[in-house]
Image (cartoon, rainbow, N blue to C red; front, side, top):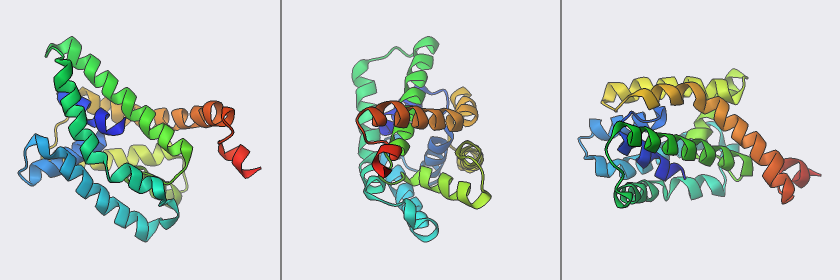
Length: 198
């Protein structure tokens, strides 16, 4: 969901979410074409995993690698799906594409956090910051998003309306998705944290 979301947001051309602006900025800084966004994403995720290993090893688990390793391939797949759907390039359809991209992104990350099999690299960095500043996830997410946004834009990443909206609502939305999924879905199938620990 997250990989396809990143490619949908990129294809909508209304700006990327802050993390994807950073990926896109690094891609631009390296002089690589848009089609190489998946490769750049994988390299950055590897650097984030190394950072997690140094600063927050407890957040690394099998899920960290399940998320990070195929991410670039799913971004490439997302571009192909978007092309196959032959979505018109009108503003209304681009807004709809961006909406779908953000929806998949927030749901994907929120569910991934709820299943608790290790953090994805970006969320791992956010959670490490949360621990350092002793605050809520949504606060550290907003801080990380703003930092990545500034760096990504400086490197030439594409910004737009989606960028601003994501920076403001991603943290709270992901936290809510994670809480609801844990309480409603995982509890129903007896896999939520409360059931497993009892």
